[in-house]
Structures are given as C-alpha cells and as structure tokens.
Length: 116
Image (cartoon, rainbow, N blue to C red; front, side, top):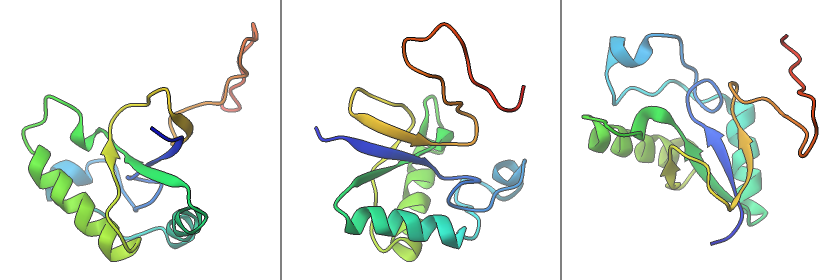
C-alpha cells in the first residue's frame, strides 16, 4: 500500500448541517465546498492518493450500498473520479483532514487543542 490522505466528506468537502442525513436520507450529500474540492483535485494531479473518510460507511450500516453509491456519484460529479471510501485510518495514512481531529505532537507529554 502507498501513503494516502483521508479527507472527511461531510462539512469538509460537502456542505452539511446537523441532521441532514436523517432529514434527507443516506443518498443525500450537500453541495461541494469548492476550494476544498479544488485542493483534492490538485493533490490527485500531483499523484497523491486521496480517500474519502466518513462514518457513513461504518458498520453496522443498513444503508451501506446506498451511501457508497451516492458518495461515488458525488465524487465523479465534483472531483472527476471515484475515490476509495473508508471509515478508519491505517498504517499508510499520511494525513487526516477532519474537523473533529486535533493535532497532537508525537511522543510528547502534552496535548495541543486550540479550542480548549
């Protein structure tokens, strides 16, 4: 496997308001956040591997197929190609672009969290 970037779908690549998934269903994905989609396209042109990172496909998920198909369709329409979809990081994850993650220095005894 090669190193890859994980990019969260909802609120990072596509507009999403709390409750949209339950309000509109698993096939609904918001409009693209243009500057971020352009960044992903740039990474792909540079030869970087990018994966969609989302809890929409985390088990147990009764709408796995519907969610996967909707994400692939959204990616083709807005990014220009299908991207792998995952709900976890692995040893080959180079970076994670997500609003819920915090940067913590490696092998240090302190935490960095600008919101606290």
